[in-house]
Image (cartoon, rainbow, N blue to C red):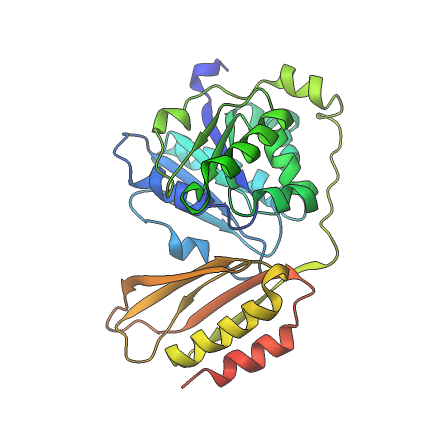
Amino acid sequence: MKTNTLIPVTILTGFLGSGKTTLLNRILSEEHGHRIAVIENEFGESGVDGELLIHGEEQIVEMNNGCICCTVRGDLVRILGDLARKQLAGDLNFDRVIIETTGLADPAPVAQTFFVEADIEARYKLDGIITVVDAVHGMQQLDEHHEAQEQVGFADRILISKTDLLSNDVIQVLTSRLRQMNFRAPIKNVHFGKTDIKDILDISGFSLDEILKIEPDFLEDVSHEHDDDIASFVFKSDRPFHMEKLELFLGDMLGILGPQLLRYKGILYIAGEDCRFVFQGVHMLMGAEKGSQWKTNEKRGSVMVFIGKKLPQEIFEKGLALCLQ
């Protein structure tokens, strides 16, 4: 099959809370003329990012309860195969795929899929790996997490987010470190995902030859295990939250466990509000904003996902329950 008939794939990666979904929303809302199928992978057992995405004509497939680079990689092969068959049959209309990995994913096994799976290689080409780095927490994440290092090392483009929160001198130190880790990838700062679409799509950035120079065993079996002390849990409730109580409880928990909280996000049902609230954060940085209106007959409820190191799940669950009306 000729290369120009293959479906281009972009892998969007970056550590927990770096801003991948914000960037993806930027891509989906841009008037670029591309028809995109999105494969969304979350580490937690319950998906939240699908709720955070802008839904237009895009085909969005969620993969939960596992990391795309290991436990659910077989699902990725199956989903890519299904998408290709539906496109050929005329049941789906898309011309490219974006895979947003969980923040704990090593991109190597994901990229490997496009070279070792014959059916996938016959229908798709890996266009590039885009890595988002959190300016505020990037240095710490690179120090502590092998996955963050792999994400930078395999990147074809590196985008630094949240640069407005730090001085230029601090940004330059991080940029220098990233450039030392990966001299091939252009590095740009982004503000809330705003970057030129041609820096992300159709970049022809992934070179198998270059990757084999860096990692000669790339095409061989790539095993990947996550740190045993990193885990996730989900809190759900059909009862509304009392906003002030919830803010006080989460503020106290951040003060005590902020360094252990790698990522937290959710959709909140707040008493007295006609719209859902979206909350998310990394370590001590937490924010919330109004989301879409609840529909008239829609069942309201909250879903909160917490990912971190040795988090006291029972304390969280009891405390959150006390914040409900």
